[in-house]
Length: 319
Image (cartoon, rainbow, N blue to C red; front, top):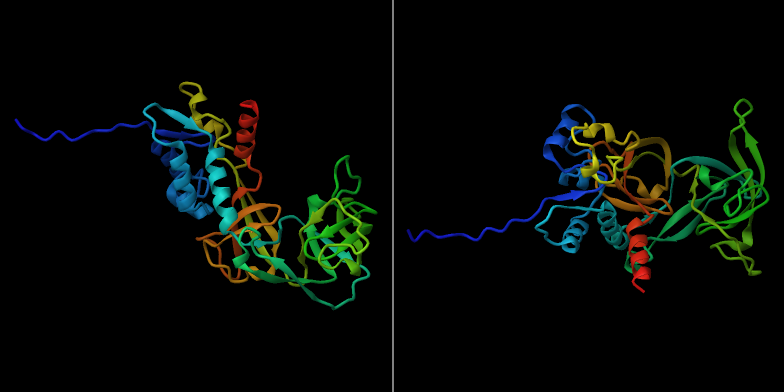
């Protein structure tokens, strides 16, 4: 009949580990209130990925790497996260933020004095310049960066131990203040070496740890939402036939921290803006809930790169 026959190309469906891609199953999560909506940052939807801080460049690079396959396959989500880290590492300015604040008082630092330390915005791009970070007598550090009784190979702050505060000084912990009822450490008292401004000692002595920090008087309070994988089962296809996939939902896929502190340069950060919180991971300003008066950050991806370790292991095995 001389009818034109178009070429038809079929390719397989893409599945990712630690999540579900079925629209029917995702709709169940939305309708049952298991997530906040189609744009929930845990959802593998474009609106969800965008709100979480994924970039178009990272998604395109992921698609380029996996290619097109005619057979159903499940791709490790670690590869998508690896592509994202590579992209964000080049474009994201660095800032300091403390998610679990522990108060630090530097006893021999002058009261009322404030210094502004010069900090690099992105070591991958010198064109992004530097910024000034205020330093004062009272600071916050991460609670996990201190141990009263440090285990072996713990090199961060402990009683009698000296560490470097990034861009600032060497400090030594001299005493600990605890809550009288719970016994929890609530405050550290330290001394600083004024000769080590910028992070180096004139006498050449070395320390084994560098900690990030924020000034207590200048830091901004913020909410930080830590997102993790939606599904506990690595491969969704491994779920037993007839089993309810929702029984494999990760109960710890979202942790909200409401008492975080971030450096003052983040005042007025625009929704969708992306940053690397030094030593913690990549975060973006939530496009729905964040306001100039109440900042909300979504964790896009942690710094640890599982896929890079997988690749290195494969290269080593290949000789």
